[in-house]
Image 1 (cartoon, rainbow, N blue to C red):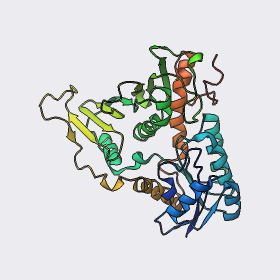
Image 2: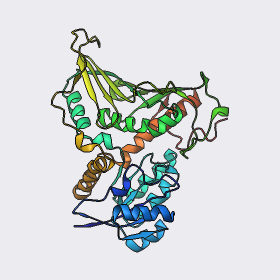
Image 3: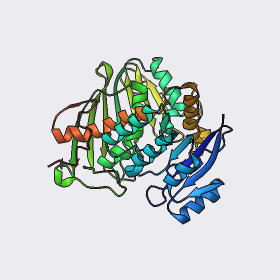
Image 4: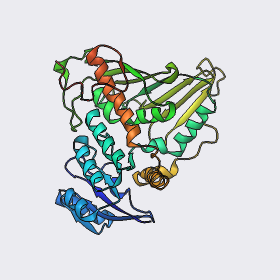
Length: 361
């Protein structure tokens, strides 16, 4: 069966995301029929790039006329994601959504309810979580390469967006990876600082890209997962000239496995219970690790996600990087803000689904 696909984009409000304009190209089972972008210049450029036969200024008109089976929601900015997805769900479309999913959990909840009411499958753009090297590392951890997992440390990209913005834009990738590896989080205790002092309501700002309110340029969030597994996420604004630490370090009873987030994702490990390279052999690549050389462009990375989405539709199962799983990543984001505001540990799922910084005073 061939699925008709459409793309929703907005050149001036988050653009076409990370290669979402070509996400539905190259599949025998997908007919990429139309795209929508209110910006005329951006729309024409996208038509020329993709070769899509029809284009619209208004995504609502496109959905009404095309009645697609699949929709890609491309803009990086999440401020309109809910309205886009609800409109797509209303015509019965499955889909692929750029991250972050939405501004707060209340919006994410509404989006999940809309797709579950119609049995629709939606994936979110966490490409690394489906990269062959990541899936191989996941298997090795579960097979005991580094023994029993004792703790996990994650760090954001720590660039000019360090702190609250890093938590939302880059941390969400790590959170989806952590949930894939270790299941859903149970609680969060966080501390957020602005220029070295505990962040206060006066420090709340809105970032360059509209993501909702943020606070802090240093963030320390400690999460508890199943079996009391401690997982931390930290982000600190620092000298941009250093090598990035953006990634995850898994500390086990027999050694450490580290991954720096990116393509190709450099996975390394040491096998020593002291967590030191005492034998002098250095950090080694993972045994029998597959190459990510075929995943160096956005189209190839998105292909892993879309291929799984198509399989999920055929098999009537959740996609691996489902909207439902992404909601847990948003719990981790909102939980970090909520814990700091409350000055206490918060439990998941959060009771208050609205953004905790909006009414902080």
